Image 1 (cartoon, rainbow, N blue to C red):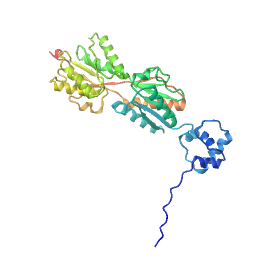
Image 2: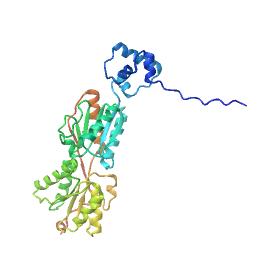
Image 3: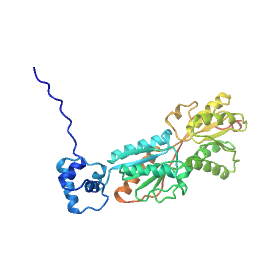
Image 4: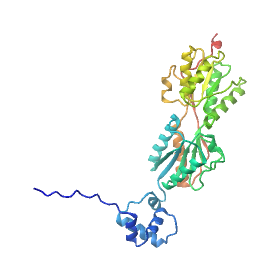
Length: 345
């Protein structure tokens, strides 16, 4: 019989202490070399790096940055993972980052306050990133209460352009204008609007553009109905709109609310588009499957994410600060819009 032999022990990875012993320096010195923080004589630094290589020490991200000049890592701060647009944007950022040789560190936040943003930056600093993309649609990022760090390259998505950082976004105003003009061009006397939440910068810009377009065309500006991006809030708005006989055209600030509006109109017996036309905003994948298929504004979230990543990498690698850039939208006409009944008479 063979004697039982002990199972092989896993090979222990060399530690920072091993490097310190081999180089004849303190652990603190090794840490300074690895992080690049603090003063270390050049001859000592070379000795520590040589010890790392000889031992096969697997450097952490800070040590890799010391060798290659960058961490090859990008932080992403996002204030909502549930929205269709944010997930599409994040997918594009992650895909393009991987192609460019960068990894992604994602920190989702619930609120846009100085405390939460500062905490997110502190965490990303600990994780050693080369730059940060902020995906946010809250007004408060445009307020003085939130300050972005001066020591890291930053690109902001979905905010104003008061910062000295690149800002990338969909041209929200252009999209709202296309939606409103489409309905007016069909012959509707005015267009009602179900807006996104008050704190949303995107919703604010769409609402402003809708109102401005109506005024420029000499149309009456109806009272705004405010939703929260959800189909439920759209349904509540649609139930009220269905009772207003003068309503012939509705522009919803996103497709989810448009879906709720369509359901409420159907339940109230108001025919779409024979009696009321409905336009959404986003062109989510399911919009073509609504009944009737939804006329909407297509946002190119993939382009927004790709531009943000490209802009950040340009800042990191070439120190090029690119100006604010807006991605154009498209009007996608489907069966939920038509001329109003009076125009057909």
